[in-house]
Image (tube, rainbow, N blue to C red):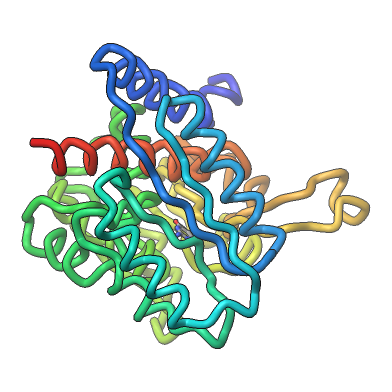
Length: 287
Ligand code: GUN
């Protein structure tokens, strides 16, 4: 098997998803609109927001950008969200996280109308996913399911292990794999004998937030490895590499049957799914 045959090309799959969305938007002559809010100037968040705006432009989605100073109060932010909730021209609202410490992220998330919650973070969206109702699904886990489908990875009946229990990735990921009839285990910082569990995974999703934590000793031969982590590295000390994931790619590669790289794996899919959710928001509001 050639090396590239094992690598899940998230950039290519995301490109196809965005092409389909663009095609549909052009064909229907519509103009979905996404409001993108960034508070402060965190460099990583600025890069993510710019990538989201670029993807909008590619797909024919209008992005309205609200770049607010770090000092913005919670009240000011909530009042902007309220205004955007009521604005019929706006189909989706995204507040880039993290927000500065003086703002409560939960209040911000809950302030977004569930009809415009394209990130899928609100209680209503998460609840809908848990009980199998329609609603917006968090973009990263939704993108991972799309990747698994694109590579014909069977989920039904498989041992799926999700490492990490965040509201944005771990929990919705577990719900989605369950919806696909996987047998799902979630591990976290209090899990005992973690390698016993991960070592039985047919599909292993790493969302632990620790650079290169998962080496080959965690992995069963033939497993499909999905790496959600993204961490900055000093290129001088890492053979020119600027980024790495939660998985130690070089160590795990041999054992894996398929593996996502960092960058170019899960990351591009998150943005593609955001585009998809924005188009769905437009449809829901105009049906
Ligand atoms: N910060 C890190 N990931 C995300 C995401 O998917 N959406 C938003 N809004 N903020 C994030």
